[in-house]
Length: 336
Image (cartoon, rainbow, N blue to C red):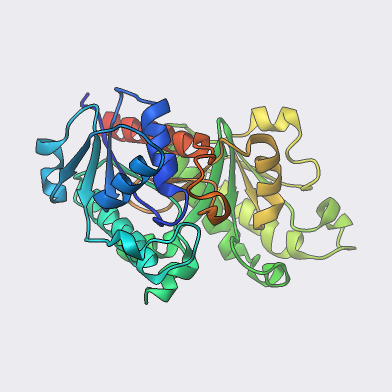
Protein backbone atom coordinates (compact mmCIF):
# COMPACT_ATOMS: atom_id res chain seq x y z
CA UNK A 1 0.00 0.00 0.00
CA UNK A 2 1.07 3.57 -0.61
CA UNK A 3 2.03 5.67 2.37
CA UNK A 4 -1.06 7.80 3.10
CA UNK A 5 -0.88 11.58 2.96
CA UNK A 6 -2.11 13.13 6.22
CA UNK A 7 -3.01 16.81 6.09
CA UNK A 8 -2.50 19.03 9.13
CA UNK A 9 -4.25 22.37 9.52
CA UNK A 10 -1.84 24.82 11.13
CA UNK A 11 -4.12 26.12 13.87
CA UNK A 12 -3.78 29.56 15.43
CA UNK A 13 -0.27 30.99 14.80
CA UNK A 14 -0.36 32.65 18.23
CA UNK A 15 -1.02 29.36 20.04
CA UNK A 16 0.91 26.13 20.49
CA UNK A 17 -0.22 24.56 17.19
CA UNK A 18 2.94 25.35 15.20
CA UNK A 19 5.11 24.29 18.14
CA UNK A 20 3.51 20.86 18.62
CA UNK A 21 3.66 20.26 14.85
CA UNK A 22 7.39 21.02 14.84
CA UNK A 23 8.02 18.88 17.92
CA UNK A 24 6.16 15.98 16.34
CA UNK A 25 8.27 16.20 13.20
CA UNK A 26 11.50 16.40 15.21
CA UNK A 27 10.82 13.89 17.99
CA UNK A 28 8.35 11.46 16.38
CA UNK A 29 9.46 11.04 12.75
CA UNK A 30 7.80 8.19 10.89
CA UNK A 31 8.18 6.67 7.47
CA UNK A 32 4.69 5.14 7.63
CA UNK A 33 2.88 8.24 6.36
CA UNK A 34 3.51 11.57 4.66
CA UNK A 35 2.61 14.63 6.72
CA UNK A 36 1.60 17.82 4.91
CA UNK A 37 0.85 21.06 6.76
CA UNK A 38 -1.70 23.54 5.40
CA UNK A 39 -0.87 27.09 6.45
CA UNK A 40 1.66 29.88 6.22
CA UNK A 41 5.34 29.01 5.64
CA UNK A 42 6.59 32.21 7.25
CA UNK A 43 4.86 31.29 10.54
CA UNK A 44 6.97 28.14 10.69
CA UNK A 45 10.09 30.03 9.64
CA UNK A 46 9.42 32.38 12.56
CA UNK A 47 9.06 29.55 15.09
CA UNK A 48 12.07 27.64 13.77
CA UNK A 49 14.13 30.78 14.31
CA UNK A 50 12.55 31.48 17.71
CA UNK A 51 13.31 27.97 18.97
CA UNK A 52 16.70 27.80 17.23
CA UNK A 53 15.72 24.73 15.22
CA UNK A 54 17.04 23.60 11.87
CA UNK A 55 14.55 22.17 9.39
CA UNK A 56 14.16 22.56 5.66
CA UNK A 57 10.79 23.91 4.54
CA UNK A 58 9.34 22.66 1.27
CA UNK A 59 6.57 24.94 0.03
CA UNK A 60 3.88 23.29 -2.11
CA UNK A 61 1.97 25.93 -4.04
CA UNK A 62 -1.39 24.13 -4.28
CA UNK A 63 -3.01 20.90 -3.01
CA UNK A 64 -3.12 19.21 -6.41
CA UNK A 65 0.70 19.21 -6.40
CA UNK A 66 1.09 17.44 -3.05
CA UNK A 67 1.95 14.03 -4.48
CA UNK A 68 4.33 15.45 -7.09
CA UNK A 69 6.16 18.00 -4.92
CA UNK A 70 6.29 16.28 -1.52
CA UNK A 71 9.83 15.81 -0.13
CA UNK A 72 10.73 13.29 2.56
CA UNK A 73 12.61 14.62 5.56
CA UNK A 74 11.38 18.19 5.14
CA UNK A 75 8.56 20.30 6.54
CA UNK A 76 6.08 20.16 3.67
CA UNK A 77 3.66 23.10 3.69
CA UNK A 78 0.80 23.80 1.32
CA UNK A 79 0.76 27.59 1.24
CA UNK A 80 -2.78 28.73 2.01
CA UNK A 81 -2.46 32.50 2.17
CA UNK A 82 0.00 35.28 2.93
CA UNK A 83 0.37 36.10 6.61
CA UNK A 84 2.43 39.00 7.89
CA UNK A 85 4.57 38.08 10.88
CA UNK A 86 4.17 41.60 12.25
CA UNK A 87 0.50 40.68 12.79
CA UNK A 88 1.53 37.88 15.16
CA UNK A 89 1.58 38.44 18.90
CA UNK A 90 2.22 35.12 20.60
CA UNK A 91 -0.34 34.21 23.23
CA UNK A 92 -2.90 36.85 22.23
CA UNK A 93 -6.29 36.58 20.54
CA UNK A 94 -5.98 38.17 17.12
CA UNK A 95 -8.46 38.39 14.23
CA UNK A 96 -5.76 37.98 11.58
CA UNK A 97 -4.49 34.84 13.30
CA UNK A 98 -8.08 33.59 13.45
CA UNK A 99 -8.47 34.25 9.74
CA UNK A 100 -5.40 32.28 8.65
CA UNK A 101 -6.33 29.45 11.05
CA UNK A 102 -9.82 29.27 9.53
CA UNK A 103 -8.56 29.36 5.94
CA UNK A 104 -5.93 26.70 6.64
CA UNK A 105 -8.56 24.39 8.10
CA UNK A 106 -10.99 24.91 5.22
CA UNK A 107 -8.26 24.18 2.65
CA UNK A 108 -7.36 20.98 4.51
CA UNK A 109 -10.99 19.84 4.50
CA UNK A 110 -11.39 20.59 0.80
CA UNK A 111 -8.21 18.65 -0.02
CA UNK A 112 -9.58 15.66 1.91
CA UNK A 113 -12.88 15.87 0.04
CA UNK A 114 -10.92 15.75 -3.25
CA UNK A 115 -8.91 12.73 -1.98
CA UNK A 116 -5.66 14.70 -2.27
CA UNK A 117 -5.01 13.64 1.33
CA UNK A 118 -6.30 10.58 3.18
CA UNK A 119 -7.06 12.15 6.56
CA UNK A 120 -6.84 15.43 8.42
CA UNK A 121 -5.42 16.38 11.82
CA UNK A 122 -6.43 19.76 13.17
CA UNK A 123 -4.11 21.80 15.35
CA UNK A 124 -6.11 23.99 17.77
CA UNK A 125 -7.48 27.37 16.86
CA UNK A 126 -9.10 30.07 19.00
CA UNK A 127 -12.88 30.16 18.50
CA UNK A 128 -12.81 33.78 19.64
CA UNK A 129 -10.16 34.73 17.06
CA UNK A 130 -11.99 32.90 14.27
CA UNK A 131 -15.20 34.76 15.11
CA UNK A 132 -13.36 38.09 15.33
CA UNK A 133 -12.22 37.41 11.77
CA UNK A 134 -15.85 37.20 10.67
CA UNK A 135 -16.23 33.41 10.55
CA UNK A 136 -19.21 32.70 12.80
CA UNK A 137 -18.70 29.15 14.05
CA UNK A 138 -18.41 27.55 17.47
CA UNK A 139 -15.59 25.21 16.46
CA UNK A 140 -13.97 22.86 13.96
CA UNK A 141 -16.84 20.37 14.01
CA UNK A 142 -19.47 22.86 12.88
CA UNK A 143 -17.27 23.93 9.96
CA UNK A 144 -16.69 20.29 9.06
CA UNK A 145 -20.41 19.57 9.11
CA UNK A 146 -21.15 22.51 6.83
CA UNK A 147 -18.30 21.76 4.41
CA UNK A 148 -19.26 18.07 4.13
CA UNK A 149 -23.04 18.60 4.14
CA UNK A 150 -23.32 16.47 7.27
CA UNK A 151 -26.39 16.91 9.43
CA UNK A 152 -25.67 14.26 12.07
CA UNK A 153 -22.27 13.83 13.65
CA UNK A 154 -20.73 12.71 16.92
CA UNK A 155 -17.73 13.80 18.95
CA UNK A 156 -15.69 10.86 20.19
CA UNK A 157 -12.62 11.06 22.40
CA UNK A 158 -10.22 8.14 22.50
CA UNK A 159 -7.04 6.96 24.18
CA UNK A 160 -5.76 3.53 23.18
CA UNK A 161 -8.90 1.30 23.28
CA UNK A 162 -10.80 3.55 25.67
CA UNK A 163 -13.37 5.51 23.63
CA UNK A 164 -16.14 7.86 24.71
CA UNK A 165 -18.86 9.23 22.42
CA UNK A 166 -20.96 12.18 23.56
CA UNK A 167 -24.70 12.74 23.14
CA UNK A 168 -24.27 16.44 24.01
CA UNK A 169 -21.03 18.40 23.76
CA UNK A 170 -20.36 22.05 24.53
CA UNK A 171 -23.61 23.10 26.17
CA UNK A 172 -24.43 24.44 29.61
CA UNK A 173 -25.19 21.73 32.15
CA UNK A 174 -28.64 23.23 32.78
CA UNK A 175 -29.50 22.61 29.10
CA UNK A 176 -28.42 18.96 29.00
CA UNK A 177 -31.64 17.22 30.21
CA UNK A 178 -33.83 18.70 27.48
CA UNK A 179 -31.33 17.48 24.86
CA UNK A 180 -31.40 13.90 26.14
CA UNK A 181 -34.08 12.64 23.77
CA UNK A 182 -34.61 9.21 22.28
CA UNK A 183 -33.70 10.62 18.87
CA UNK A 184 -30.39 12.15 20.04
CA UNK A 185 -29.33 9.09 22.00
CA UNK A 186 -30.25 6.74 19.15
CA UNK A 187 -28.40 8.91 16.62
CA UNK A 188 -25.25 8.78 18.77
CA UNK A 189 -25.44 5.01 19.14
CA UNK A 190 -26.04 4.46 15.42
CA UNK A 191 -23.21 6.71 14.21
CA UNK A 192 -20.79 5.36 16.79
CA UNK A 193 -21.52 1.74 15.90
CA UNK A 194 -21.28 2.38 12.15
CA UNK A 195 -18.04 4.35 12.27
CA UNK A 196 -16.28 2.01 14.68
CA UNK A 197 -16.74 -0.52 11.91
CA UNK A 198 -16.10 1.88 9.01
CA UNK A 199 -12.94 3.58 10.31
CA UNK A 200 -11.63 1.15 12.96
CA UNK A 201 -12.48 -2.23 11.45
CA UNK A 202 -14.38 -3.38 14.57
CA UNK A 203 -17.04 -5.90 13.65
CA UNK A 204 -20.21 -5.67 15.74
CA UNK A 205 -18.72 -3.13 18.18
CA UNK A 206 -19.77 -3.43 21.83
CA UNK A 207 -21.24 -0.19 23.18
CA UNK A 208 -22.19 0.70 26.75
CA UNK A 209 -24.56 3.59 27.48
CA UNK A 210 -24.44 5.71 30.63
CA UNK A 211 -27.47 6.97 32.50
CA UNK A 212 -28.01 10.70 32.97
CA UNK A 213 -29.03 10.62 36.62
CA UNK A 214 -27.24 9.16 39.65
CA UNK A 215 -27.81 5.42 40.22
CA UNK A 216 -29.90 5.08 37.07
CA UNK A 217 -32.40 7.48 38.73
CA UNK A 218 -33.26 4.91 41.48
CA UNK A 219 -36.49 3.83 39.79
CA UNK A 220 -37.52 7.37 38.95
CA UNK A 221 -36.69 8.98 42.28
CA UNK A 222 -34.00 11.14 40.63
CA UNK A 223 -35.36 11.85 37.18
CA UNK A 224 -37.11 9.95 34.40
CA UNK A 225 -34.84 10.48 31.37
CA UNK A 226 -33.61 6.88 31.56
CA UNK A 227 -37.10 5.38 31.37
CA UNK A 228 -38.56 7.85 28.87
CA UNK A 229 -35.67 8.56 26.50
CA UNK A 230 -32.46 6.57 26.94
CA UNK A 231 -33.78 3.03 27.40
CA UNK A 232 -36.20 3.29 24.42
CA UNK A 233 -33.24 4.40 22.27
CA UNK A 234 -31.20 1.42 23.42
CA UNK A 235 -34.12 -0.95 22.74
CA UNK A 236 -34.56 0.37 19.20
CA UNK A 237 -30.80 0.17 18.53
CA UNK A 238 -30.82 -3.46 19.63
CA UNK A 239 -33.77 -4.15 17.32
CA UNK A 240 -31.60 -2.76 14.50
CA UNK A 241 -28.87 -5.27 15.34
CA UNK A 242 -26.53 -2.95 17.24
CA UNK A 243 -24.60 -4.53 20.10
CA UNK A 244 -25.46 -2.04 22.84
CA UNK A 245 -26.12 -2.36 26.57
CA UNK A 246 -27.25 -0.04 29.34
CA UNK A 247 -28.06 2.07 31.04
CA UNK A 248 -25.15 1.96 33.48
CA UNK A 249 -24.77 4.38 36.35
CA UNK A 250 -22.03 6.85 35.45
CA UNK A 251 -20.14 6.27 38.70
CA UNK A 252 -19.52 2.60 37.83
CA UNK A 253 -19.65 2.41 34.04
CA UNK A 254 -15.89 2.99 33.69
CA UNK A 255 -14.63 0.38 36.15
CA UNK A 256 -11.64 -1.56 34.83
CA UNK A 257 -13.51 -4.72 33.79
CA UNK A 258 -15.94 -2.72 31.67
CA UNK A 259 -13.16 -0.69 30.04
CA UNK A 260 -11.76 -3.94 28.67
CA UNK A 261 -15.17 -5.32 27.68
CA UNK A 262 -16.65 -2.47 25.62
CA UNK A 263 -15.33 -0.81 22.47
CA UNK A 264 -16.99 2.52 23.26
CA UNK A 265 -19.01 4.24 25.97
CA UNK A 266 -21.84 6.63 25.11
CA UNK A 267 -22.20 9.34 27.75
CA UNK A 268 -24.87 11.98 28.07
CA UNK A 269 -22.73 15.09 28.52
CA UNK A 270 -19.21 16.41 28.15
CA UNK A 271 -17.77 16.16 31.67
CA UNK A 272 -19.55 12.90 32.46
CA UNK A 273 -17.21 11.02 30.16
CA UNK A 274 -14.24 13.26 29.51
CA UNK A 275 -13.33 13.89 33.15
CA UNK A 276 -12.52 10.18 33.44
CA UNK A 277 -10.73 9.97 30.10
CA UNK A 278 -8.52 12.97 30.85
CA UNK A 279 -7.75 11.78 34.37
CA UNK A 280 -6.41 8.54 32.89
CA UNK A 281 -4.90 9.74 29.60
CA UNK A 282 -4.54 13.53 29.69
CA UNK A 283 -1.50 13.73 27.41
CA UNK A 284 -2.54 11.08 24.90
CA UNK A 285 -6.28 11.44 24.29
CA UNK A 286 -7.51 12.26 20.80
CA UNK A 287 -10.65 13.95 19.47
CA UNK A 288 -12.28 12.12 16.54
CA UNK A 289 -15.28 13.36 14.55
CA UNK A 290 -17.70 10.58 13.60
CA UNK A 291 -20.47 10.79 11.06
CA UNK A 292 -18.59 12.82 8.43
CA UNK A 293 -17.33 11.32 5.14
CA UNK A 294 -13.66 12.13 5.83
CA UNK A 295 -11.24 11.16 8.59
CA UNK A 296 -10.61 13.92 11.13
CA UNK A 297 -8.69 13.75 14.39
CA UNK A 298 -7.27 16.42 16.66
CA UNK A 299 -5.26 16.69 19.88
CA UNK A 300 -7.43 16.97 22.94
CA UNK A 301 -6.25 20.44 23.97
CA UNK A 302 -6.68 24.05 22.99
CA UNK A 303 -4.39 26.85 21.88
CA UNK A 304 -2.78 27.15 25.34
CA UNK A 305 -1.97 30.83 24.81
CA UNK A 306 -0.45 31.00 28.31
CA UNK A 307 2.48 28.75 27.35
CA UNK A 308 2.75 29.53 23.62
CA UNK A 309 6.19 30.46 22.35
CA UNK A 310 8.03 28.97 25.34
CA UNK A 311 8.86 25.55 23.85
CA UNK A 312 7.27 23.77 26.81
CA UNK A 313 4.04 22.54 25.14
CA UNK A 314 3.57 18.76 25.26
CA UNK A 315 3.22 17.34 21.74
CA UNK A 316 2.10 13.84 22.78
CA UNK A 317 -1.62 14.39 22.18
CA UNK A 318 -0.87 15.78 18.72
CA UNK A 319 1.32 12.78 17.98
CA UNK A 320 -1.45 10.43 19.07
CA UNK A 321 -3.87 12.32 16.80
CA UNK A 322 -1.53 11.77 13.86
CA UNK A 323 -1.10 8.08 14.70
CA UNK A 324 -4.84 7.63 15.03
CA UNK A 325 -5.43 9.35 11.69
CA UNK A 326 -2.82 7.05 10.14
CA UNK A 327 -4.48 3.90 11.52
CA UNK A 328 -7.87 5.03 10.24
CA UNK A 329 -6.39 5.95 6.86
CA UNK A 330 -4.77 2.51 6.53
CA UNK A 331 -8.09 0.84 7.25
CA UNK A 332 -9.69 3.08 4.62
CA UNK A 333 -7.00 1.99 2.12
CA UNK A 334 -7.57 -1.69 2.88
CA UNK A 335 -11.29 -1.35 2.21
CA UNK A 336 -10.81 0.59 -1.06
